[in-house]
Image (cartoon, rainbow, N blue to C red; front, side, top):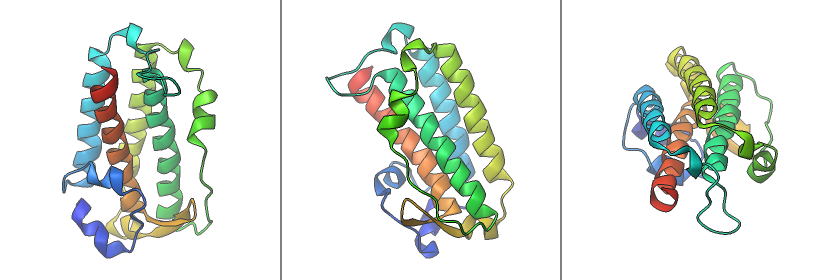
Length: 171
């Protein structure tokens, strides 16, 4: 499925910033490409930069990386539930609370990369095995309607958005 097909699914564009970070790309291509770009970013990242924040009250590099993974996990879970036709309304989450509890200062670059690969590979396998019918299913999370496909594109666009910020403001 391509991103341009989302307009026909009646899904939310609350997360338009993340969708706009992507070209009109195929969902699986976006997930695979994002994985390769994230690996490159981490491999080039000096370990001493993990604790760097570009301003007061801003997240550190490590916190941004962990936020990307936290969000992907939550969105992956939503996509899984909705793809299985689960109609349960799912709550939102407080990203700032998650970051406080992430223990980012003790994390090593290699461990962040290994954890990311586990999360992204799981996301890839989840979406790779979905039918078009499953991708079009819609559920409610954070008081908004989401198609399963939209969740996949938001996962990819969210990561790309934050990687762009890391490159512009942190590195």
